[in-house]
Image (cartoon, rainbow, N blue to C red):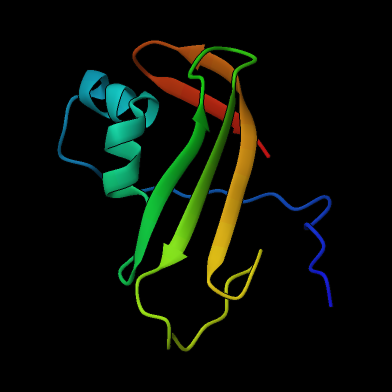
Length: 99
């Protein structure tokens, strides 16, 4: 069965980070940094597209490290594909994205 994307879903997350707003802002817009901090334990990130400007698009695959993982991916058996665009960038305090 082919998996369908969630329609009308809104995800929101927050975290206290001991870093300056400028450091966090840069980490959200640097694809190499995103590949390090985004994947949860047991996964790795593969950046397919990353254009960090208002209107720019991103596509990141989160891939399970082990072939015998317990939780199947959302996009395929071994991966979750995250796609969207950068809606609004307000340096150095805010990055808004859509999926």
